[in-house]
Image: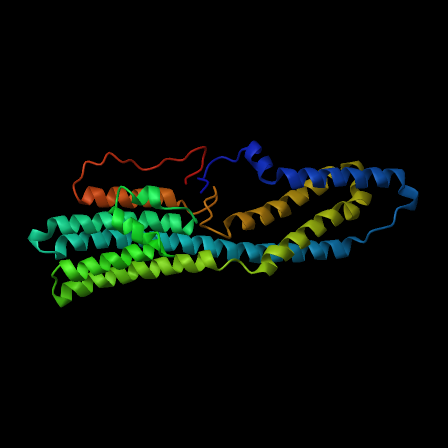
Length: 294
């Protein structure tokens, strides 16, 4: 996630620099052609271009709203994961009997392994380096045989609670309620991950935006003349930036600089849970690297 801050010209140019350079080159070609063929230039009506620009702007705005809704829902679900994780750790310490301190510690450490496994599961990355110091070797060997590693960890945690915690029905129901909420949050994240934006949004926005940018200098050159590359490129920048913004945020778990900062969130969960256990862990929260929070 790019943290809020000053806009840097270099970053802006890298953001849409290549298509903008192509558009500028096309503007120069159109302007040169108009100046050389002014007597025979085919008049391009401005009204259809204006209507097309308005339609493209509406379409891009709608697509970007849908993309941001996906990104924001992903952030909300991870916010819920933070809250439910704290609740699970607190309940494990409070609801278990006094003689079950080590079991409560084990459950909390398993949950830390779970959130890291979930982060890597959503990013389609191997979790074994994160899980090796947190789980037993035999369990990791079993996890390598399953498709959904975080779900398997949560299932095993539930089995441990049911088999070893020796809780009465009321306390067991309280813990199970929190674990159900964790599972629901994971399901929501997987729904976003496994359901891409409809192909029409991915294809038509690119087609319409690029077509509009190609037609733009044809409709402006008669009125702007030599200033056409400047005016057309400036207007095209707005549309290209809107197009790229939607592309960046439509998949919030892709491990790019525009994603929900899962690495930072899971580190925060781990710090909170280890602090609750009174451990001297020495972990610190992540800070932005080059204005990006991962």
